[in-house]
Every structure is written in structure tokens, then in C-alpha cells.
Amino acid sequence: MDETCMKMWLPARRGYVQLPAGDAKRHCLEQEQRAELGKRRSALSLIAFASDDMEVQKALPQVLIGNSHVLPAHVLAQLGGPVRPNNMFILRRRSSWADADLLVQIFRLVGKCLEHVLPECHVLFSMDASPVHLSPKVVRAAAIAGLHLHFIPAKMTPWLQPLDAYIFSCLKARVRQKHDRALLESETGEVTTLQMCELICAAVEEVLQSTSWARAFRGCGFAAERQSDLGGRVGRRLDWPHGPPTSSTALPSLEQLQKICITGKQIPIGWLFHLITKTEEDTVPTAAEPFACAEAQDSKPAHAWSGRLRSSSHLHFPEHHATPAAETSSSHAAASSSAPPLASPCPPPPAPPVPLHLLPKLRRLGPPSRPRT
Image 1 (cartoon, rainbow, N blue to C red):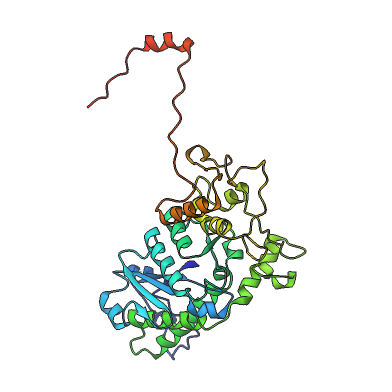
Image 2 (cartoon, rainbow, N blue to C red):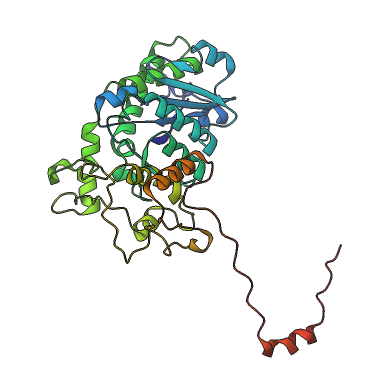
């Protein structure tokens, strides 16, 4: 999943101009296409989804978001409403920015569209590590929808995100072709808002929903077995002489999580690994599972990140000494609650006592001054 901007106004391309006899060049170019600043800045937000499996690709939704000024109500009604064929959705909101509440609804929509796929395979949901994607409510919605989140490190999306590296350029080129054709066929020399929305929806259906993008995922290093499978830009950027390294089936370490996530952002570990901990308690992990854990040693703590987090003083990691039945019931209770599992807050420690040698100095300072009103 990734977001991109779809402009509602595109300037006409410059071509060759044959000057009539006796006319100056400046007079022929006076009728150049012009538009107001608001029209030039108007755009829709596209939340696009892509998969390396064509069956999953056809089931994924594609969401267009526009504010009330760019996408008027009568234009949305002429488009047929918010729901269009082939899992195309158009939303009219106060703002076209994707906030946490909107992403929660979108994750519910993705889980609904992939109901027939989730019982058969694990879905690795890849997106960039922006602050809104790391919010606890968004991670919780992804866990409830049955999606295993996979975050792309910061400043690496142009090489490791298939949508950024391959798909969006093809999509916008197709939109440009359709816009130029509509501009030539127009009697007024302009493309209306309704026509622009229609051609954007048509380009999304042709490029995203009718094309197999397995090569884009191999080019970004996903399921690439050889060095030749990687894209040229990705290979030069990552400098992998022997191809992509093999992925481990163990849980990531704290250092790996901190390198991916934004500095200073609290990592919602409870919901981020909710599906994995649930699998560990209910069934025995096998080598076929992508997140199977190795057997824990007696010297290690029960939780993989106990005592190693920056915020470990505010987290509580209970010891698992109960019976398997009790552990299973507790895991289901944690999954149904609104707070992340394994992350209940503890009361702060008491304040340390004041050293004795500082008491005379504090007495000389006198009582604290009253705040001014």
C-alpha cells in the first residue's frame, strides 16, 4: 500500500508551431492554456494496493479521496456514487489527507476484500514507516483484519516499494495519454472535473487491476532468487553482489525495529506481533510459517523485548507460568480488548529522597513563589 497525488489539471504539452505568413511568434502563443492557481493545485489522493499474485490483485481495493472543493457532490453523483465496479472506491471528505481514522476503515475494507485469501495464506502487508502508519489504532486494525505488517525503512521507498519504483510511473503515464487524447477531442480545449475523474478511474483499472506486477516485486527484492531478478537501481543502491540475503524466521531484534521505525516513535509491539503470539500459543510453529519462532532458552526472558525497550519501565511483560488452557484463554481476552496485549502500564516509581547535604540550601531558598495572575 502507498499513497500518491493524482493532479486534476495537467498543462498542455508544447509542440511544433507553424507560423502563418505575416504573423509574429508572440501573437501565436498568446492563446496558451492558462488556469487559476487553485485549479493548478487541485488533486486527488490515491491509496493504491498491489500484489504479486494476480488473483489477489483483482480482489484488492483502490481508493480515491477528494475534498469537497476538488470533488463536488454533483460530480460524485454523476460518477455513480462512492462504490464503482472492480473494487474501485471514491471518497469525498473534508480533507484528502489519509489520517489514522481513515486508514482504520481502509484496513477493514482490505480484510473484507481478502476474506477468501486469508484462510489459505499469510498476507504480508508492506507500507512505509510514516507516523500515521505506526499509530496504535492503525496497527490494531491491521491485526484484526489478519494482515502481517511489513514496514519499509525510511528513505528506502524509491527502491524497496514496488508502487513507488515501478507502478506509479506507469499509472501517471497512462493518465497523461488519456488526458492528451481527451484534450484533443474537446471542443473547448479543456478537460472537465468529471472527465478527469473518469479517466483516472479508467487508468487505475487498466494499470493496477488488469496487469500482473510480479516482476515489480522481484525487482524490489521480494521473492528474488537471483541477482538478475533485482532492478538495476535496487542492486546499485543496496550493493548485493550475491543476490538478496535469505530472510530469517526468527522475530526481529529491538535494534532492527528501531532502524525501521521513526526515531522517538513508540513501537506498538503488542498489536504488531499479535498474530504471531496468537499462533505460538494456539498451535506449534512450523518452518513453513513466515514468522515461526525458535525455541526460547531458559536464560532468556519470556518476552522477546523484555527489558530492552526504551519505554520498558512503562510496560509490563507477564511471565507465562500458567497452564496451556489458561494461556489460550488469556490470549483471546487480550485480543478482544481495546488495549494492545502484553503492554499494560505500570505505576511510575516513587521520587528519590532529597540528599541531606542539600537540605540547608533548600531552606535558604524559602517557600516557592506564587504564580502571577
